[in-house]
Image 1: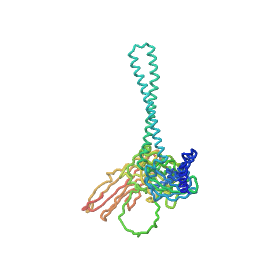
Image 2 (image 1 turned 45 degrees about the vertical axis):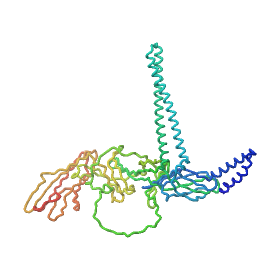
Image 3 (image 1 turned 90 degrees about the horizontal axis):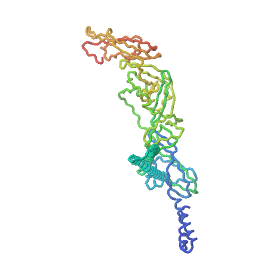
Image 4 (image 1 turned 135 degrees about the vertical axis):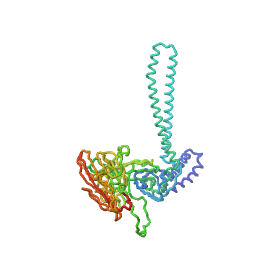
Length: 552
């Protein structure tokens, strides 16, 4: 139908052309038919559109963009070009759906050119903005020049008047003029300077956007050919995958004081540099894989082998920590380290093989590559607190929180910032696959608990008798609680383990628990405010005098 209309005006044009000089009415009708012909041709012309992003699902690597375009189009076949799409667009992921009585004939991805870009409303809007702010800056510069000239005139007139023998009345009038007018001119000059700076910054931003468009930063296009049986408003939904976007989970774990619950705050660092700002979009964060594999998976041989065991640092993976691994932990203020993120209403859905967090309010993420911090979940768990000190390594007492129901709060592996009473303590890494029974968190050392370990000379000696040598060492450990409340504390030390039948090890340690496999000694006490507790133990090692004792 569209092709017939196009060709039907040609014979009519030739008929009326023979009589156009005889009759002005015929000339008018000829012009009308020419306009109708142009309209018929233009209805089949390319339609250049830019997308309106409505929904974004951000995966750990990559994102799915969902956008809409709409256009009122005459009946016939048309080509809709969706322009200025990200260069990282995955052409194999493009999905197109339409609403209305029309047919989508074909969809293909292409690399754009500047001629098509210049047809888009966004491109024209940029040119208009640049022209507008150029004009504003020129007008303000003209006003600024006039203000500066008036100020110079006043100052010049003042210098001339001071050299003349003016009477006292003239001098007073001039002084009044200077006092009134000069401040007004200074204020106006300052206001215009500020306006020029602001408009220059805006102009630079628009020029940068124009430069990026011309450079082809968003140079992909989707060409959609449609066929309409009647004129109508065509509504098309696009979905496609892009790279240059990601998110990573992390936690803030907070406790206000000993005995209180630990708050788990799951957050996300979201970033994107696709070249297109996501403005007021429905945002979701997914742990899934955006790549949909169509090939049937193949089972390879499952082979087992052995290797040497390598111990991992349990503290780094959120497992039960050995207190001997505790390091000196600094205390810094939270405000110097973490940017506070506004709380959002988030609905989480657990799907077949991933978790998706849906932000219920529209959100904006600019294409600048910077991290945007979103808070996506809050929960809390009861914790059992105790202090642990290993004075053989460090005299400090570290506050440890043990959490048994951690699995209801820890869904994803990620870094965790630990805070106590609003102050940053340390950073760790939590992996739910590596936690065994309880999640143990160190909230740093407490200076108000004093721990001292010293050797007791009276209980220490070295002796040789017969064919043997004997080494005896005695130690006292003292813990003093200067806090205003009682504390639970565990003190850890050790006795050596013999790896040779000729090395005999014995010890005495009142009230200590001994682990024969590790040699660890532990004392567990509740110490009241302003009270002290003393622990003593003695180690005796006997070995042949003609041997050298290693490891002592």
